Length: 131
Image (cartoon, rainbow, N blue to C red; front, top):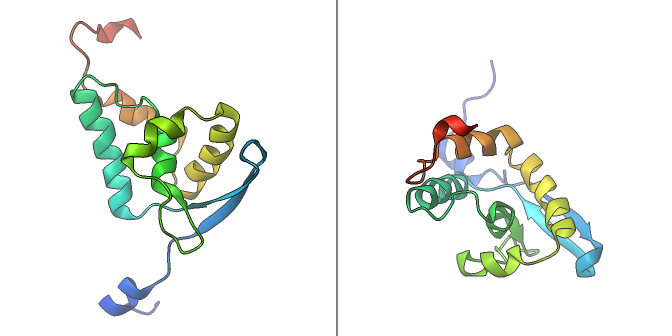
C-alpha cells in the first residue's frame, strides 16, 4: 500500500510541470506550464459563459488557453484576460505550436474542446439539427 499523504504534503508538492517551446516566429522560446485546477475551471467557465452570452464560447480558444499557461521563469503568468485578443492576433503557426504543447501538458484533448463546444447553449435561431 502506498503512503497516505498529509494535507501539508499535498499542498507542498511541486506538481506544476512545464516545458519550454521554441517559437522561431517570436525569436525565442516560451515556457508552458500545466494549469492549476482553478485555472482549468476558469477556462471551462469562460467557455460556458461566453456561449451563454452569445459571444461564442470557443472564439480565440488558443489565445485563451495560452494566457493561462504561458509563464516566466518564476512561474508567473505572462498574460491576463485583457491580453487575449492581442495574443490571438499572433501567427497561427506560432500559436498552434505552443497550443499543442499546452493541450498535451494539460490533458486538454481535441475531444475535450469538442465536448465543451457541444455543451454550449445554442444561439437564438441556431438549428441543432444542422450538424
